[in-house]
Structures are given as structure tokens and as C-alpha cells.
Image 1 (tube, helix red, strand yellow):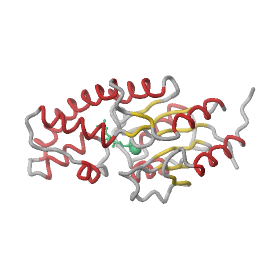
Image 2 (tube, rainbow, N blue to C red; image 1 turned 135 degrees about the horizontal axis):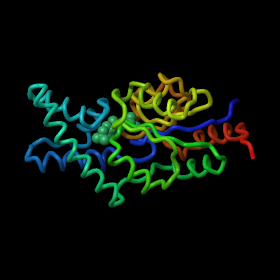
Image 3 (cartoon, protein in one colour; image 1 turned 30 degrees about the horizontal axis):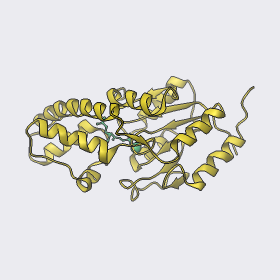
Length: 235
Ligand code: XBP
Ligand code: MG
């Protein structure tokens, strides 16, 4: 068994529960403010999550409703900017919380000196305040959807983290929650462990080395403890 060189975390659905009561609420508020009749209920939103990136999700929705592609893209950009600002407020008001077992895992990795990083499709303007507020200063490299041209399932965001670290994927583990995320991480050559949530429980996560409901699951905890035991760090 090999030790852990680093762990790279996804954000939405992995570090935090943010989709149903965070992003979805912010998208709906942006629709309302713009005077549009569109609203995404819990089930409808789940069906839209296979499109990574809020701006792309909006553009696809508007196009499917019959708007020409150019108009859909422009309106999506305006709505997404407003949605991002609303999401930031939800973050600052403390509505977005860590998923079960995540704080304990982060503490344990920190205590063993394992570097932690972030690779997300989300937008930097809300990701940064969220990480600061919920986790403090725990993450080294943070790459968001704002910095990469291709979103998950493209491996671009993971490859950018590795590039900034100046390292290859050996010994680096990704933690993900969705089919898009697992595909992105494994395509970057990383070992990926997955925790699922109500939106991703039926996703194809079969390329992940381990799949559990959350990071508090005994199998998840044991998997990391085994690797931490094999991790020897210079004193
Ligand atoms: C998350 C996403 C994001 C969020 C919304 O995917 O796809 O688009 O749903 O955030 P992952 P933005 O967890 O795989 O990174 O509106 O900022 O895109
Ligand atoms: Mg995710």
C-alpha cells in the first residue's frame, strides 16, 4: 500500500451540501429578479446537474425552452452573474455547511501533514469565501471553473492543480461525488474515492476505488487511515 502525497477535494456535493439549498435557491432568485417565470424544483434541478457549470446549465435550459443559441448564452451569462452574487450571500450567511465526516477527515489529514487542494467546477467568487468560512486556511492550490476552459468531466481542473503543484498523479487521491467528477479525476490519472448524495446516488461512480454515502462512513474512514499509516513524512 502506498502513502498519501496529497488529497484534492471537489467542493459541490463533496466538501459541502450546496446544490439543493444553495445553488438551486440562488438560480431561482436570479430568475425571479429578472422577471422570468422559470423555477427549478428539487427534482428538476437534479436532472440538470449532469451539465457542469452554472452558466452552461442555464444556457442549455434557455435553449431547450426555445431561445436561439446566442440569446440563450447572453441571457445565461447575465443570470449567472447575479446567481453567483446571491450564492455568495448564502455562503456569507452560513447556509452552506460541510458534509458529514468532512471536518474530521480534514483534521486527520492536517495532523498527518498531508497537503490538501481543491478542484471544482464552481465559480471562484463564491468558492473562495465558502472555503474560508467553512474550513479556514486548509487548502493549498484552489483551481475553480473560472480558471479552466473545459469543465468536468474534462480532467482540465485536476491537471491544472497537478501542474501548479509541479507533480504527477502518483500518490494523489481525489475525493468526488458525481459521475462527472469521478471521470475528470480518473482521466487525470488520479485514484478517486467517492461519497454520494441524494443527487448523485444513481450516478455511475464505478471508476472510483471506493464508494460510500459520506466521509463519516466506517469504510471511508478505514481506507484513509490505512493510507495514513503508510504515509511517512520527514520529521
Ligand atoms: C459543480 C457544478 C457547479 C455548481 C454551480 O460540479 O457543476 O456548476 O453546480 O456552481 P462539481 P456555478 O461538484 O463536479 O465541481 O454556478 O458557480 O457553476
Ligand atoms: Mg461535485
